[in-house]
Length: 190
Image (cartoon, rainbow, N blue to C red; front, side, top):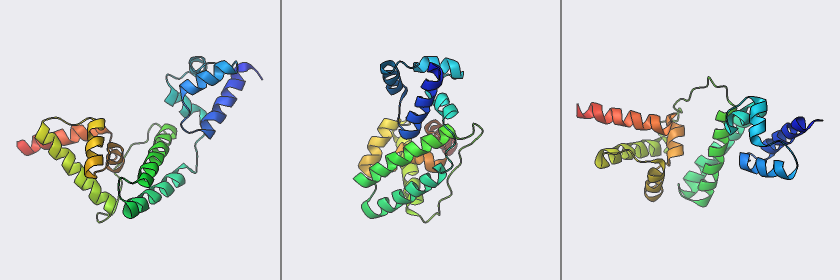
């Protein structure tokens, strides 16, 4: 096996075993084991960045959707049992965030996000509505949409959903949420 094939085989295994494996970790490992660097692999695989490479190397995990649903269920249970800011909830939130990022990295490029269809009387939907309303109100009060770091600090203090959870429930990116809220405010004022 040549050095390139060996590098790719080992990198695929590393990505599969360690979901949070980074390009920096690969370069350290590659240097220690006389394998190709990440930039050389980018060139060979004709990709521009780490996410594209992961997507290309990782076979679609057919069980990923099941894993996400399982962790989502556990997260909802933890929220109801221990509250939004418990250690268990935080751990599950990080896990689902990682799984969702992995899902989008491996999903077809034509995939479009969409708002999640939660029952309107569920706790997660009600918490989303409260969080969204407070996000809009804060934008009105301070004449500026908060950054993700600012919002997460507020969310933690006031028991609102953090920005990742709002993105997930809304099916929008933070920037798309910002645009939506600014448009709502402008329409309300007119």
